[in-house]
Length: 327
Image 1 (cartoon, one colour):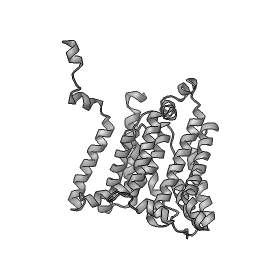
Image 2 (tube, rainbow, N blue to C red):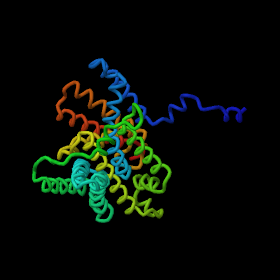
Image 3 (cartoon, rainbow, N blue to C red):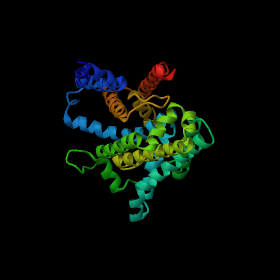
Image 4 (cartoon, rainbow, N blue to C red):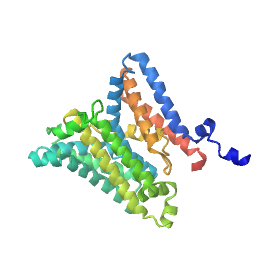
């Protein structure tokens, strides 16, 4: 009798208990926002509008992927705003140097973002500077360098046709290229975090860095690579945003710092590190994008949006700080 009971399939209540409450809550909030949005606009639930929102979410999704890797370490990357701006501006700048520049535009933008991430990683991993301090400092340095480069004026260089195609084109009928790129980046992130030694090391360092070091993990190298990846993905997101708008802007990354952090923590990734899944980050990105859309319809000023994002991060930090796993 006991053997028969042991072979029975898992019942729905047991399945529900195995679901991450944060991810379940995030998807429930998405449904709630869709319902609320339908009251403000009759076109809110139309396939065209939802596809457009998914396209907009893709840019945040690419940037949030890098942020998630860093947060899983128990660190933070505050250089996202100007990593995004540098990626977009330098990609457009490279495009001004003829056909070769157009080919190398996106790789050059990503390389510049990797340089920012490298500075962050060296500071955190080898110099033991708190990530909040070093990333804020590199963000200021990047801002100063871009102001010097542009002379304080708006960038004059335009995005390449390849950048515009990646951000606004359709390789598959009805599916924006930006969504495909996010799907590819997301699939790569899932594979790296769940199927590679690097991914297991990231979770191990986030749980307890000293224990990971004593187990033989090269913690400094893992932290360095994580920050380089964050800088590269932020810069890639900036290049896509430049293609979406046809040109870069100095303030193009300012609105992505708090949303990228909020999307990650809303999806259940512990801001203290060591716990989280990419599915939760996807839910958080979509949730933040829909929230932004509704706030825009409600004509909520930017200051109000920042207050909401900050309140969300504080609430999730308090929640995880009080959870048994982190006591």
